Length: 130
Image (cartoon, rainbow, N blue to C red):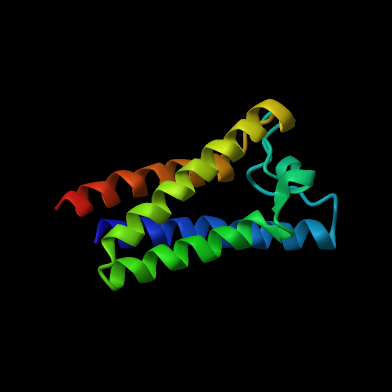
C-alpha cells in the first residue's frame, strides 16, 4: 500500500512538472511557486537544456515511470518493480549531479522526486525480501 502511495505522490510531482513546463512555454516569464530565488528555482531547471532526456521531457518520463511502478505493484511483479525502482534512483543520482553541478540551483520539485525515488527503492526492496 505504501508503494502505491509514493507512486501516486511521484506521479503528482511529475504532473505538476508537466504543468509548469506548459506554463513556461506559454509565457517564458512565468514564475512557478517553487521559484524562490536564483539559487532555489524550478523554472531555471525547466528552461535548461537538461530538461529533456532522449528528446522527451523529464517530467513526461516521470509520469511514465511512476505509472509503470504503480502497475507493477498492482500486478505483484516485485522483481521488476525493484529493478525499475533502482534504475529510477540511479537516474535520479545522475539528474541530481547535473542539477547541483551544472545548473547550480536547488529545485524543490526535482529534489522531491529524487527523495520519492529513493523511498520507493527502500520499500520495493523490503517488499521483495518479503
